[in-house]
Length: 99
Image 1 (cartoon, rainbow, N blue to C red):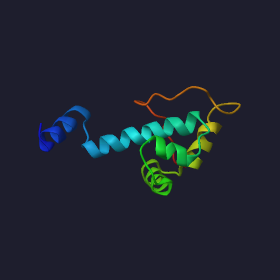
Image 2 (image 1 turned 45 degrees about the horizontal axis):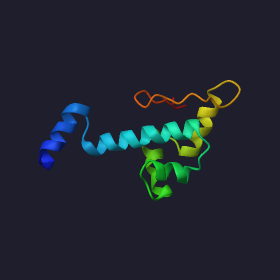
Image 3 (image 1 turned 90 degrees about the horizontal axis):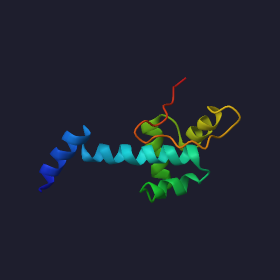
Image 4 (image 1 turned 120 degrees about the vertical axis):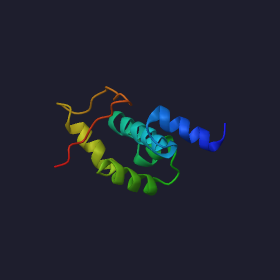
């Protein structure tokens, strides 16, 4: 399979370019880890494929609309009494309403 054929197949199957598909998958997993664990942001960044935590934080902020630390704090407030042990579905990640 050529690179062009792979790009077309991914776009057809996922509805996104390979780059956007990968980014969405990584950020979805990062949201899960931030919401369900107390891992430091740098550890979350490494687990989803980013060696530079600062770059990960900038990218997360740009795409999600808030920094990873604030996302985590907001997730904790959405559950009465604190944190939930429920892991979000990666195909339906938690949505953040902007103020």
